[in-house]
Image (cartoon, rainbow, N blue to C red):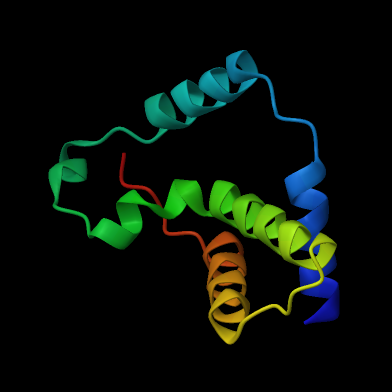
Length: 96
């Protein structure tokens, strides 16, 4: 867990990616994976899979705040951190 906490804190303190490069990557992915079968419904988890990196960084920031104020990291935060890392590692294959 210690290395996971450090990774989240680094993600929170990393400089933000440029929006132009991010949009180009999303457009390329979208164009390369369009098919008629893509109209299937997807779950809420699949829709939110792209937010996993942002969630991970936000949790890292929250952990930073707790550590700097001298408070303990709650079990809930540990669970949220672990789930966010799992969502990053095992992203859903986007049908879009």
